[in-house]
Length: 299
Image 1: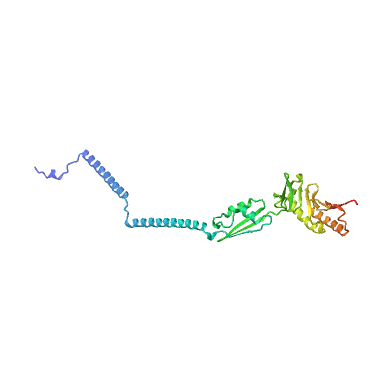
Image 2 (image 1 turned 90 degrees about the horizontal axis):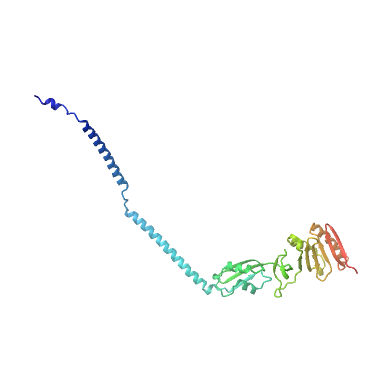
């Protein structure tokens, strides 16, 4: 028998062997993919290498920051030493303290209030503190303190200007032209001024005092010299503003409504009385609502 027919034929494969080969090929394929992904992940998570160049750059930056910090500390320490030297040096000791704008305060009072004196170090003084101390004085309205190195201090003061005496809680005070209190009248600081009386029921009439007194000033200036020193101003809602003169019986009463017209008519009447030499006989001149009344003393 010939064996050729058998050699030319392929032996049929078992179905189980086919399945096994397919499963093995699948497993091999999955394993290959897993191995490739594992190798790629290893490449991705590979630890970076630090080059010599990057290390030198970091070292240079750190060196620069250290040098800058050391320089800053050195400058700060130097400034501290300079400040301590300057605030203890006789070169900046005060030799000249100038005070400007005072009328009611004395030079000595200002220095005592400011708590400054010659010999103190100019740089060691706080100008804000000096200004605050001076503003606590009732006579001081505004203040400016200027340092002129190396040894001078200039204090400029704007005082409250007193215009009246006024009674408050049983004590006599200086008051400004608006009737606001300044300081109590005492023998150490005595100024001869007219007395101001404001009626309690006058409301906000005190706010008109400055304007009213200013408008009356030109009218009073036209009177003879012996009438140039008013002794009393009285302000009330009923009578308006009332003016009395030192050593004279004359009183001027001016209504606050239509005040410009009232002043105009009162001025005409006073000029007429002056021309006729009858002011000394006049007791009262009242101007209200554009009308003027004259009261004459009985002989």
